[in-house]
Length: 363
Ligand SMILES: *[C@@H]1O[C@H](CO)[C@@H](O)[C@H](O)[C@H]1NC(C)=O
Ligand SMILES: *[C@@H]1O[C@H](CO)[C@@H](O)[C@H](O)[C@H]1NC(C)=O
Image: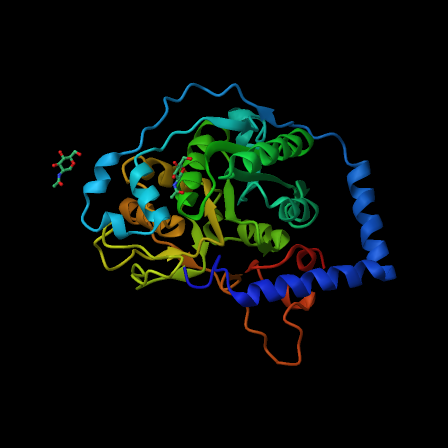
């Protein structure tokens, strides 16, 4: 909700400033150093242990649009993406194009995975994935526990783009073994579908993972802090108890303004309030809670806003989302106007901060 994933002029400006900054960075010696370090890492790392597998898609009967929705009053006046949502919201199964069956050492090995990073990433966001692989999403062992990474993707809308980007994702999957892709349109209102497909993958391929970080590809996560937080948790939650933390949002309801990215008309939901939920930019949950969400999702029809949908699943299970002060998905308030908002030291204590351009993440 709120400014998350919003496309505002400031973001464009920030991106442009970012590109300028990147050129500057690479023009200096420090940039040279960063670049060298980066090549060194990639040339000495061992071949990916779990190459991405283009699957022979299990036969999934094509899901037909529900044309009866055209009967809903006011349907013709709804924005196109909302009409699409209503036409296809009953479709919950899609062929999987890329899999990573051994990501967790198989279902039996999966209790050995302490933290699985599951990052929603649209096919075109190549640079973001590359930076995450090199920085906070690196697969490694920290404090004796194993961290694994996956990107979750659909397909581009344009046929030619989709053809190119599917090839790109296949290459990435072959090199890094960290891509799950399904044959559905990767759009904002299909993020819930992506989430639900991921949970069913998790059930089959990685049911024992202790904890999950679920987020967007433009967040910076301090993975060390996350692991320390999880290891230090009171009551020795080993992934078998409930945990769902992030930036808590409560007492809000659907935005009924048509211009908003989050516009949800009465035709989608008549209710005026949402259950409490955590902003979807980044959420930390236990394996137990992920499995509970999966079970509940089977009985709850898709809702276009993914983080709200997860709140609905939790509510149905009688579980509450909670807030964590270290998770800031709607930006960090800089303590002084003299301090750079992306002074790296400023993020040392936090678990997660939303919205960075790739080079800021590297810095
Ligand atoms: C809804 O659509 C069906 C089939 O197109 C039609 O037969 C029916 O009359 C419509 N109902 C309403 C209330 O418009
Ligand atoms: C979701 O994906 C399906 C399958 O590609 C597509 O038909 C539908 O239009 C998409 N929905 C939205 C809201 O983009």
